[in-house]
Length: 70
Image 1 (cartoon, one colour):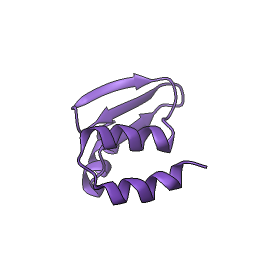
Image 2: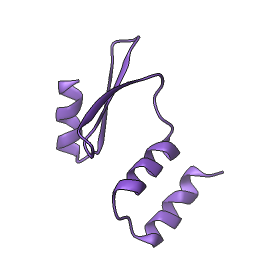
Image 3: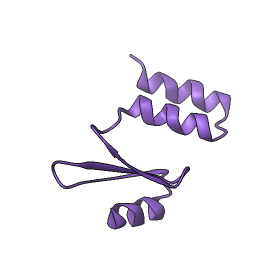
């Protein structure tokens, strides 16, 4: 997980993921919580999670929202 957190920090990402092939760990830089999850989140789920915690301009939400919705 430390390597995933380091790379995520370098890239300015808000979430980092690590797996050993069986277990998936998620680190949320917004909350500082590390959690074991059952499956990797879908892009729309990550977008919604980020959108709830950060002020994303409405125009950007509309544009990028169309990328995640068929």
